[in-house]
Length: 171
Image 1 (tube, rainbow, N blue to C red):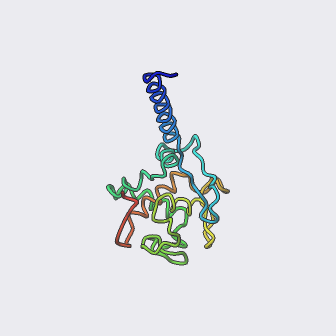
Image 2: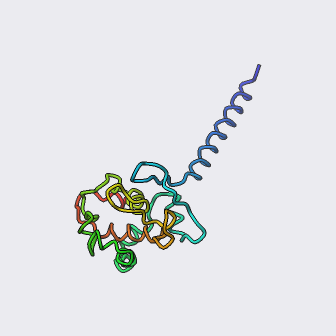
Image 3: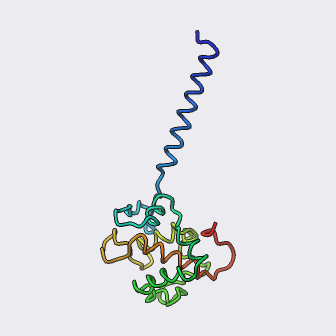
């Protein structure tokens, strides 16, 4: 029969192993992007040419530009420039207030998931069933936006928000 010390030692080793497995699982957890169209996995992966900010987002689902652009309006202009360069203005208007496409600066979200940067990224990257096509270069056209470009657009859009109320993307 096992002694009291042996049982305690075995329990301690088991608990430490379980804690180690939990920590390593959390450390390797990636941001699981899904299609706005059908909820299937969105095929955007980190690539060698990604910026550190893009790689950080693909690991955490947290857009590093959102808070940075809120603090620095001059830096946010990088997102507005991408918004104009890639003709987002044609559908969403020059300041994203809506035109043919919906406003993306008010609280009337086309999809509830747009309340998060991850959700907004997923729709821009992979398109929607509402007429928007996929804008991420990994999902069709290599001339489209990189992960970093989309993140800058999302960061700028958050600085333009006029919907009032809660702004969870700043939490």
